Amino acid sequence: MTSTIGVGNNPLGVGVDPATDAIYVSNTGDGTVSVIDGATNEVTSTIAVGNAPYGVGVDPATDTIYVANHGGGTVSVIDGATGAVTSTISVGRLPHSVGVDPSTDTVYVGNETDDTVSVIDGATDTVTSTIPVGNDPYGVGVDPSTRTTLRDQLPGQYRVCHRRGHGCCDVYHPRGQQPVGRGRRPSPTPSSWPTVATAPSLSSTGPQML
Image (cartoon, rainbow, N blue to C red):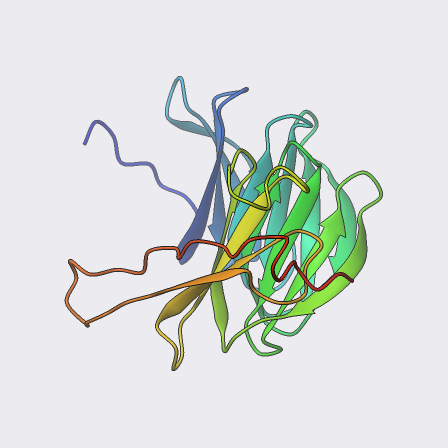
């Protein structure tokens, strides 16, 4: 550890922009985001967002930050260059996590209570679809460079991990409504976390399209 940086009340989510060396920390108790200069480890600004901000997603291609406001059912959109909130997008109930695909300018938000993922077009700041997933979608990860049987047809998959009941991760295609693969934790031991199953062949099943 090289430094300890004071931020806001109840910090929870962290997002990093490698293009600008900026770190964004959501402060759940304050309804703010602390912006840290990675070169100096100093807080350069504090941005007011929505109620109980949780997950933070960063798009380094557009210098845009997306903050899931858990208590407000919204996502705050921040311009990284100015630090201004440029848009507030309504999503599902208790949004928890944010995943960003910079190759398609698409944002995925896990809505904990709704058991859904909201898909946001980063160019227009609008929700283009809402996808039902498993119980309590708690974490969203995006791999824009995934090479699978579906990758050759429609690039970029995202993974949704569920906190309640399943102990698994589902793999979704950006335009698919049903999971194309599933990984499950075989035992509760810390050394056995979910791994993603191999996706089925597109010619045999294919994703269910929206």
